[in-house]
Figure 1 (cartoon, rainbow, N blue to C red):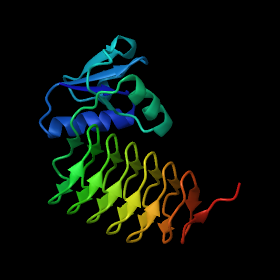
Figure 2 (figure 1 turned 60 degrees about the vertical axis):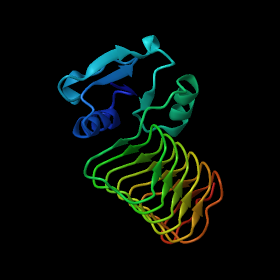
Figure 3 (figure 1 turned 90 degrees about the horizontal axis):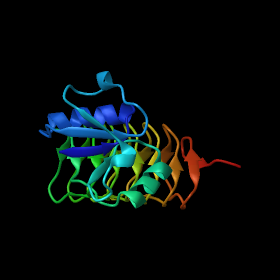
Length: 198
């Protein structure tokens, strides 16, 4: 059984992926009432405060800070959940609790940390490194040997050029083209991507 925390749209997508990947039993844990119509038939529901912290639980929501807090409380991670339409190349390592959504491509020798989200249609080229609890939004493109640190968020359609590094906790705006390294905890946007002024 796959235990998931979260009951929004992201969780519904992950439940769909789990079913397509052959995980027939899914239980959604939340302290907010879930709408069963949003989830595949047969999905079970539980109250989050009753969730045993020793159970492996998938974090099925996108807020990175909330994910860090939840993982500290529920430290056991499940196996990765990978949509059958995704292409995963030779030598790829995928961390526990990671979700790879439909139509993603992860090419040879890439490394993906625990609890990462590769949203719909993401392309991760050869030898890329992706940190833990990082969210690559739909359509993100990482060219060869790009590096994305822990707790980073790349907006929809962002492009990172070969060998460029995105620091821990950095945010890249939707549609940005990153041609230079981005320091930790920096927000960049635009073409080419530049730091946003405070």
